[in-house]
Amino acid sequence: MKKGLLAAALLLTAGRLAAWGGSPLTWLDGTQPWDTTPAKEADVQVLGGGGDGQGRAGLATQLGILDELQASGQWFKPLDGAPATGEADLRLREPDFYDWRPAFSAYGRAPFARGAWSAWGGLSAAMEPFDTGLAANAEVGDGGRLRLRLALWTPYLVQTLRLGGEASWLDAAPEAYTPQVLFNGPGDISLQAGLRLDAQGGAPLWTARLSYQLFQNP
Image (cartoon, rainbow, N blue to C red):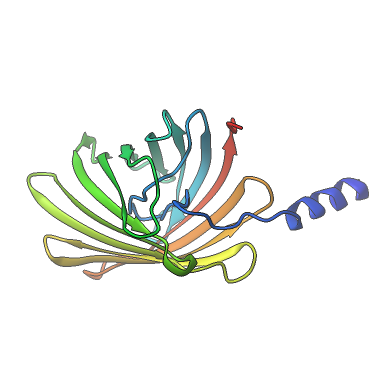
């Protein structure tokens, strides 16, 4: 038993996952990056959340169809029996991540809420100056509404820890701000947590996401 606990502790403290161009790290409140999961790979995720008087639990995944074509999806179920929410995304990105200009991707999102699907389409621009991660999204949908998003990852503060944040505007009005933190564990495990602050005074919502990468394509 003691040997097993020691082995687990060593696994949790060993290894390093450094930042790299076109980082697959994603933000918690929906900002689209340039890249997530390469072809023939999958990232599976367990989600938890709450803060509005009820807890939520869910599952998510990111799939690499081709290196330039990637899909993702998530499903949240409130623990009090309220209707579930979810989203399906598809992204087509440029083949390369550039040092001298933003790298672009086009995406479509299909959120599910209140028993109905809606559709959004947009463009993402991403850069990584000085080991940071930056992204800007412009998207339109849901009856012609316009949403803008800005997101940031800091450089790694220590080998496996970095901070991030998102801000969004809906029809030019502030929508939400979401500070967050990411811990990259050994191998292909990561833990992310954030707090969504509604700019219109709604209840703050927290989300946590535990991720593990499967089917690595050598």
